[in-house]
Image 1 (cartoon, rainbow, N blue to C red):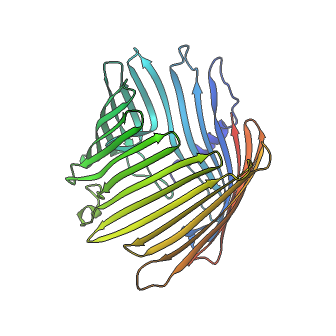
Image 2: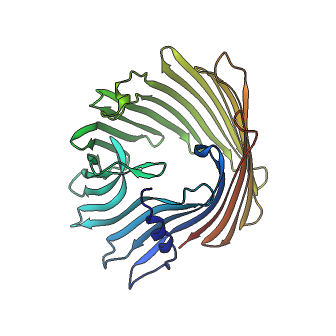
Image 3: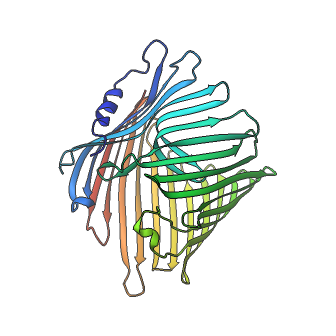
Length: 404
């Protein structure tokens, strides 16, 4: 079941005060959630569980304030389906910044993100900076992979990466990186990637990134886009995205022939005033073998009176593999400064292909939030899904958040 004992540690740490030791301080958030839902993996039997999410940061450990410890994890106890106590440790690492004013390093479980790839690792990341206009990153360690019942894999699953990126430029970001995954001595992924972002004339942003998988000898991701904002309340966005699914070299799926996917996105966002904002969008999708689809979107956010906000989103898709029409309506009302109520409705009409009739899917939800103190709040949400599979599928969540 993976890291069975971690949730107990996390639950105990959530009881720590806001400061510990002579100088060190502990801050973060504890989120305790009581949940009830139909577990689709267990023939839709009702599952009732208690979960604890804990994020914390320990700072001021040393006199110079350069060293800190960061952690985030989840523990859960199932009461109905025999899954028992389970948990995930998402990150827990020591972070030291400014060694010789040039080196930052993190050691422990952490999320690493390079232009060429990302992963959760048990390992280290070292950043070399203040050596000129280019900074460097080196990272590596055991790759952490989560399954339904915890972590899986073994010590031979490792990840390594290198990155060089511009630093000190206000209007320009750029990075070149290399990302490699290994299963023992076998290279399963070997990706070279790059990203950039450039602001032009204070009203234009040009950006993009690309990844080339040398094991598959193909670009598995390419993105290019621009945002034009002639005024602070108006933004035009245009993007082109292409992806080609590649798999680990040791996976059976790596031998299958697949099509690439492409899409072009055009969008406009306009904040008319503090009462009304609008957005329009068009998305052209290509699936290969002459398959394509068109997606049209429109939305508005309205605040007719100060405590009330209503958002409406409509989308229409037609083309490859059927068509859909759908609308989402969400509303929230601030009863007082400490309390809020909200609700929403989703309605979708879809046709899977030309040989089937139309089907509908609906979702109804209600929620509320109450601020008990400046650092404590309780919230709840209940929803019901009605679709081709369920006449009703009720789920709910009650949450207590504590910031320390």
